[in-house]
Length: 119
Image (cartoon, rainbow, N blue to C red; front, side, top):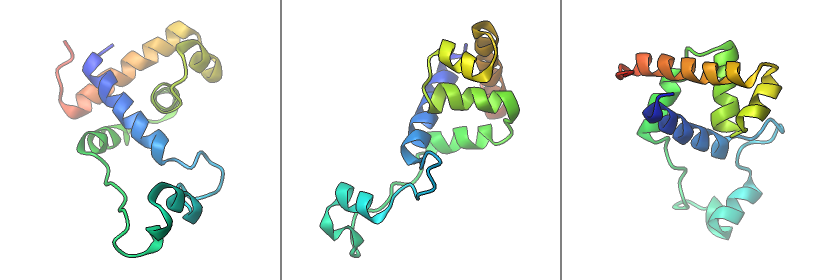
């Protein structure tokens, strides 16, 4: 496991989890949510603006664009859902050892895309 990549992926997962609508069919932020977060004047000009995606998150998002299939599912289970290894492995219908191997593969893939050392 590459610790630096793991930390960066957790930052990415936190940001994605915060911005998702979790597939309920509603927008990530509706008028009621916006008013609760920003106060009753949220709809007026000059209200609080959405924060842009942080640079580290953009880098991870770009690095993950080529990840598909089981590695993508691994990224979603570990970093977005924050599922424990055993639960994530059960969801993916693989052993915990295979799941951890996929985490390592994901780390090396991301490190390669970002041009970071893997030693």
